[in-house]
Image (cartoon, rainbow, N blue to C red):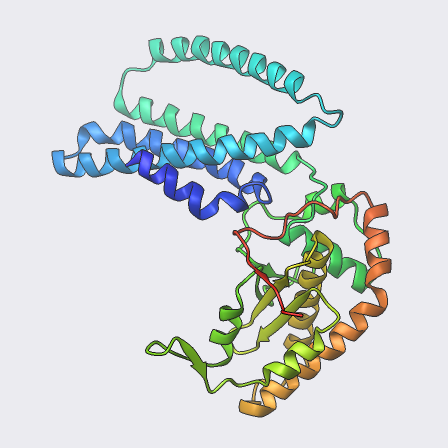
Length: 338
């Protein structure tokens, strides 16, 4: 089961491991510690339940291996500022060896003094709590320069609201280790909605119309697709916002770059913010669609006036805006015929 879990986990979440390396680095420790507790519990369980528990433990260790290995590679690349990745890995390996020897020594002392089950479980829980607390503090201390979804939310909302570009150190203090996937937040506000970037054209059609399984087509689309495409005729992405589901869908065209991805995400955040404060939730049907199209067009016009300046200021603030960190799944590209 562990091998199957490794394959499925890497297939399902492989793209998100680098953009969300801080989250997966801590998640790996949680998986490993949970597996350790299950292993300790298994001898006291009936045979059938023990098999299930040990299988679950194997799956968790497999998830730990994938998450820890991938996130460690990303973090190592971040710390190797002068291309000295080999030196960094060698020193990291030496550090781990020293810590392992110290742990064996401390464990020998503890084991010789602990005999009762209550004392054993008390020490186990205490040491696991210390392990997770120290790893949480270590992950919080890492300052990344790439703009993933959460950091993009913080930087963009602060830039538009306060006309200030937060540097990576300031954003690191504000970002959450565990954040809902694709969440759109305006500074520290509750979640305004969600966004998917790099989706297929079918995703927008599913949001706008009714799928006919017999013919594989869509009917009764709520919006004129020609009007939607006209808004983005000079852009390398297409954005639609489903107000009822609070869901933004961003299609990337074939020539889309990392700057395009950032612009599409910024636009989705602006639309979610605008729709949360200005659109009357009593609107329905064609009125709601017209309001959404008007919001998309007006927000894009306002964004185009300042976006180039935003990019220059964000780069000057120390951010690596050219790194692709917004797509957390294997995305698709839309190509229009000439």
